[in-house]
Image (cartoon, rainbow, N blue to C red; front, side, top):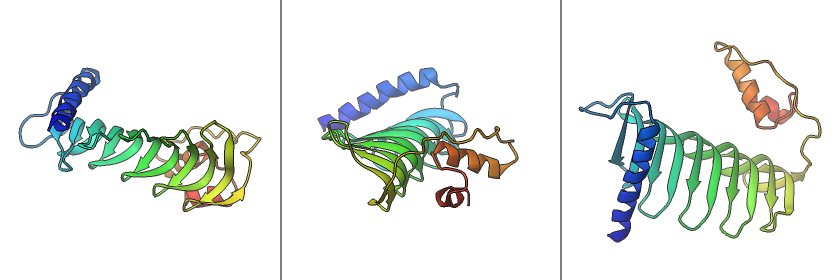
Length: 196
């Protein structure tokens, strides 16, 4: 009971800070759209953040009863975009999300200090990444597939080519930019898979 009360108090405290930084008005009425609110979510956690179309959409913070916490972007009540998930046991993920899965570029730090920094797909190591020992030394670096180390590889020595900013209407250019930001080399098989 104490933990739940503390989490609710903590969430309200965070929400006051978040609300002060939000440009959106407080939510009111039965339909919440383009507004900011604090509420207990359907998952038994406390959410403070933005709403659109009556759902958690935009920037927000969700604090769970077990002490875990997510701070970042939401889309249709799922973690989507950039965000940080901090586990009560000390583990932490900072990076990109897609439908509440680690997806894209991100860093996961284990409670014992080990760290994986690289690409993710479906919350698994997938793509180029580096696994560090607790002392910071590199344990494995290269290509990963489905959490398994496949091939040793060093990061590209040549920075990726500068691609002009995409026009708003060109979805293919936007995909190319994202793939380049992920560290994929244009023309490689991984790059082709990323843009398709």
